Image 1 (cartoon, rainbow, N blue to C red):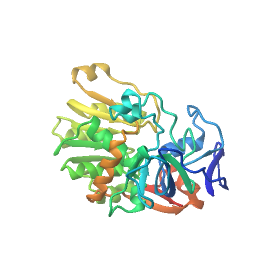
Image 2 (cartoon, rainbow, N blue to C red; image 1 turned 90 degrees about the vertical axis):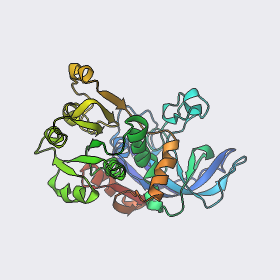
Image 3 (tube, rainbow, N blue to C red; image 1 turned 120 degrees about the vertical axis):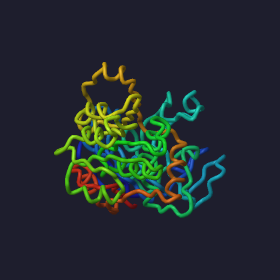
Amino acid sequence: MRALRLFAERDLRLTETEPPPPPAEGEVRLRMRAVALNHIDLWGYRGMAFARRTLPITAGVEAVGEVAGLGDGVSGLALGTRVVPYGAITCGTCPACREGRDNLCENIRGLRGFHVDGFAQEFVNVPARLCVPVPEGVSTVDAATTAVTYATVQHMLFDNAKLQPGETIIVHAVGSGIGTIAVKMAKALGCTVIGTIGSEAKRAQAEALGVDYVVNYTDDRFESVARRVTKKHGVDVVFEHVGASTWAASLLSLKMGGRLVTCGSTSGVSAETNLMMLFQRQLRIFGSFGSPLHCLGEGLAKMAQGITPVIDCVLPLERFGEGLERLETRRVFGKVVITL
């Protein structure tokens, strides 16, 4: 079968490899249909040092497939059912897993496509308990963006930041995959969205997406816009994933008791924090990585309701490298999806 394998830093090859064995008890075999690209794919491609793994490794963290085989003891999933697999290989038995906090699993075996073989191959065996069916009416391309993108945003905005209808929120990098979804979810609640872009080329797309106030952070100060829009009170929530370059101003933009939720640090991992402002203004900071399994179902439900992803482009597996290059050079607005 075909598989996209990383042999060394920036050495990604489409190769022929042996298909997996028949699915074991409790497993299903998936015929993979599409993989969506994320920054974590880019980190793996670049050879991020913190990733404990043995190369070569199959790429692909976020995907959708069809059930093509059933192991013993599997019920509730029929052959041909489209499903989204959870990317983390969790134990399912530790206290965190039993409480539905799968992304805090104490015995995690790794993240597919980053630590262990991922989904950019024709067939994969996965535990049936980590598969979420795709609702009727949701396209396969859209469903491919669920496990990392939709679920991450769902967890950030609602499990952590507790975004409420009518609040004002700053969404950074609105052209990114998670940025576009965060805008759509916030606008569906009737929130006022201040969105940042890094290039004027993305302004019209941001406005068409529904961003109320578009700020090019290379030319303007989004914290000043936030202050003006809120009549000096500050915003309720900041959706942060840029990191060092926006951190201080993001905190400065919050109202008393405001909430900042962060899942990334693409501009750098270290930033100064004004501790006096933090405690005096009673700000709340939430670190958010991945999501619990339940967020996949909630994300798919929102897609079925019409909150669909923004797709930048759809490419065949042979052009996976082009998709990574678009992501690395920030020439994307929305999601890059690879079909198999």
